[in-house]
Amino acid sequence: MKVCFWGKIANALLGNTYGGGELQIALIAKSLASKGHEVVVVDLDIAEEFQTDDGIKVVPVEGYNEGIKGFRTITHRLPALYSTFIKVNADVYYCRIREYRHMIVYLAAKKVNAKFILGLASDLDILSIRKRWKHFYSSNVRDFWGFFNAVMGELVYPFLIRKADLVLVQHTGQQELLKRKKINSLVFHNVIDLKGKSDNEKNKSDELVYVGSLDKRKGFADFYNLVTQTPDYRYKVIGRTRDKTGVILYDRLKSYPNVKLLGKLSHDETIREIARSKALISTSPMEGFPNIFIEAWSCGVPVLSLFVDPGGVISREKLGVVAGGDIRKLIYAAGNVTDNAEFRSRANDYVHRTHEINESKITEINTIFTSVLG
Image 1 (spheres, rainbow, N blue to C red):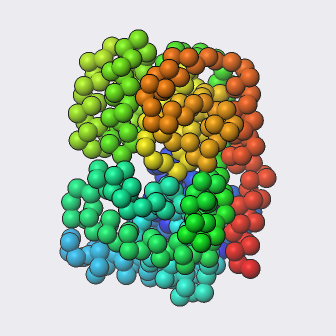
Image 2: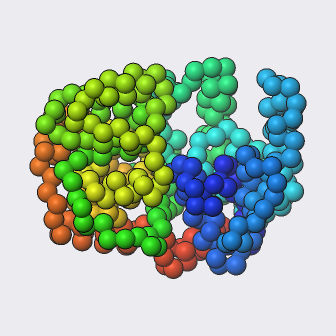
């Protein structure tokens, strides 16, 4: 079986995490390659073809940056993408992360009589446009191309969800939302590689850690409000500013003696900081299944979430606290976290059982991709 992925995946394949979605694609690609399948990744950021140590071929899009700016999306980029996907001639094409250019992948798949798998990366992918505007577009549409991408995404994504040969969702909540639209889907949980993971039970501090983009979309304003109401709590912030809201609040936090601003860290450095923390704080109003939650649980660290509980897992598995939008409840939870062996054991058991990229999970991935061929 030949499988094609695409996006800015090369860095994630080489161990340099670009983002949560890219990391998930890289882990799936490596799993399939380990089963002997031919795996090709089309990456927009590379200039020359190469092969990874896992046997994955990474290919560029020839001519992608040619043409006149402002016109080349239509004249060069989309045609070059289509030609590249046709040339790959895969049996299965996989797309993830909301992106209107997935339509080019879908059309190429149909042209070569291949199957098309669409993986959801966020609950926003299947919620109303009103919620997407409130939680995504309002802070991400800043220019003509942002507007263009938003409009094209709204036109393309509903079509792709209905036409995909298989839709993969991250948790049962997403599956239920699609059922209401009479769309079948399969739950495939985000995966995490625990190889080489060290003992993280030592050197715990009383700090609460925030990890992620520092912007309106991720609820950074709510985090700032949390800090202002809890001068006796200690925090550390990992991430970079992504919009005006983030810049303004980040500058204000510099004057708070109970807040460490660590900036953008490597993946390994981030995990070490999480492992030393009392709890992970999430104030994001909308997510899919955040990788950072899984990372925290693998370190025996609870998640204190203002809004998000993917598929009800935090409540069901007792992996932290969900405040239901009530910041007072979040404040209380943050002040009453205790480090104990029972929680660490339960959290680690859940991660090993549900998310670890072990032989059982690799077999599951293999079954999903081979079965779609019929």
